[in-house]
Length: 75
Image (spheres, helix red, strand yellow):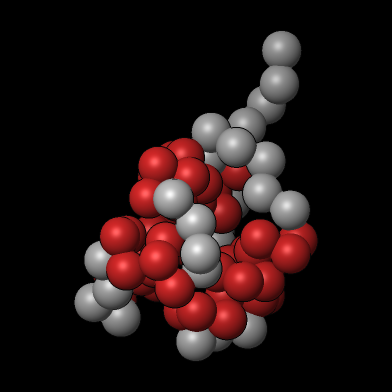
């Protein structure tokens, strides 16, 4: 059985940054050239995103990729 805890933390962080910047999930997905359903799965932590995926998301959120991994261990 896989542990998706890290995926969920990163997904939650993407969602948090997106909300802070008032960007819809639909808009971020379009900016990243992803389907909205793929962005939804990424934010929910149901997929194993690649570094290139996270890089594209970070770029379109206007943040450094490291920001996607800044979360407390209690998230």
